[in-house]
Amino acid sequence: MEAILPTETASQNLIEATGLKKVYKRGDEDVTALHKVDLSVAKGEFSVIIGPSGSGKSTLLHLLGGIDRPTRGQLRVNGVDLVSASDAALTRFRRDNIGFVFQFYNLLPSLNALDNVILPLLARGMGWKASRERGRAILEQVGLVQRQKHTPGQLSGGEQQRVAIARAMVLEPAVILADEPTGDLDSASAGSIVALMADLNQRLGVTFIVATHNLNLLKVAGRSYELVDGRLKQSDQPTPA
Amino acid sequence: MGALVYFTLRDLIHDRWRSLLTILSLAVVICGYLLLSSLSQAFTGAGRLAQGNNNLVILSAGVIDPMDSLLDDQVLPAARASSPDQILRAYPTLFRHMTIAGRLMQVRSVPLEEMPSSLGLILVQGSWPTGGQQIVVSEEIARAASWNTGSKVTIYGRDFEVTGLVRTSASNTGAIWMTYEQGQQLFGTRHGFQAGYLVLAPSADPKKVLASLQSDPRFSGSYSFYLENTISDSYHQLNHNLVTLSGIMAAVSLLAISFGIYNSTSLSLTERSHEISLLRVMGFTQGRLRTFLVVRTLLLTLSAYWLGWVVLAVCFTFLKSNAPLGSSEAPLRLTLTASASVLGLGLAAVFSFLGVWLVSGRIATRNLLDGSE
Image 1: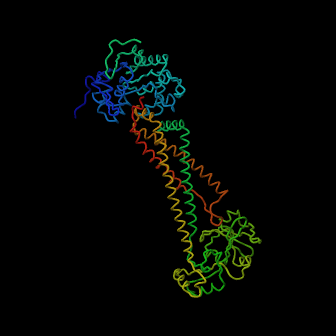
Image 2 (image 1 turned 30 degrees about the horizontal axis):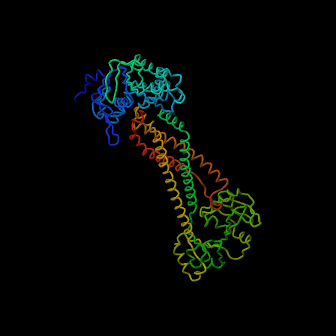
Image 3 (image 1 turned 120 degrees about the horizontal axis):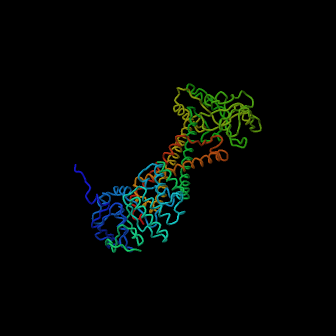
């Protein structure tokens, strides 16, 4: 049986996308959201993708996270070919490799902060006691362990986003994909979330890909991209806020 | 599993009003099942008592209710003489329906020696009457009227003493039993009685004896003859039908659980489409979410079953003290057997599972993009 060896690029880059194209059907009309996107992200990088609304930022994150499939192109994330993977394999891939952070936090309102954080551990089948210990440790990392019993309705927007980041980190994913993580926050809270993500990246080596309008994030970005009308280009000179 | 139950409980408590309404609606169905099962048991119990024997009964021609019958003293010797080898004995019976101690009761007067033999009465407490103003009463009557051995009972203005309690194994109805002589004195009937019983020899063929009597010109037109078993058999058949019907109704009523669970789960999945998609995005497999829904549904069903039990107990208590079923002669005793209860719990769980399983297939059709917004 032939051994499957990692390719050179797979061993160097966490994400390797080549010629990614995504076309949506809107009635009888084809809408191209992404045009031949090429992207390489190394482990531990903090990448920021900026672009106007409707430019395709969220679509790109959906493809990288295995939520959606490209219409054309090649995509490997952490060694997994997301183009040919089955639905079940994509579910496992998301669980084991990706942490998601959303603009509107997407916490379950019936659960407190700790329970929200340990949900991904439940998806993996981790034991009750171990998962709660792990959840508390992660909440400690984001500075919210003292608010672990509070439900989302009892937390501020910034605190909810911290819980969402803790939830995304709890399984130590290969990469965290954040879609407008500061889009629903006031400037102070947004600055705090940016600082938190930068700290987690530098201190723990967490890989981030952030899609945003917030130019402050460019200050902490190791690499930045601009996405306009579905076309991605790397910004050699990040624009400070 | 502990984590699964914990998260399920958190979810049910968060959605407490809908959870409560679901439990209440399931409890109504389950209570209906338990009541129907109890009724079925009651009919089964009543049917068990309705085992007759091979005696023949004589009534006036065309009469069904013995109260409307009036026979003369000559008919019994004549009937016995027609087949002396096959008819061992013939005895008269007086029937009266009377209000005693505020309850409608049946009073029967038969020769004392026939009480245990041909009528199959079993003395369960006290002693048989030895003469004078003495009676025995069936257990059902005694229970309904709170009588016991030694109790004084006034019938037609005369005081009688209850000397014993009997179990009516050969009849489905409870009654007050007194000797034929006491009955004649009490009701002032020197001649005539309502029904005659012909006790057949064990070797006799009841149908042949019946055919012989029915074809005898001395009796035709004036008297009707019946196999006592025919009456009890028809009662038994009716009872069997009721048992079958109530059993089917009980099982079918539980089928409503499937529809209820399907409906409520379907509504939850629609309303919480975003949450389901979010969990799928996080990596929850369809199987894991389905397990969550099944555990959630089983917890609701178990709660509803417990509540159904409580309501049933309240119903039993109310019926027993305020509106007993049946009559004091033929009471219907509601009881719920362990097997019916376990069967109900099992069926409720199976129907719940069926309802949630059918609808949970929709998890796979969730659009994951809903969960990432």
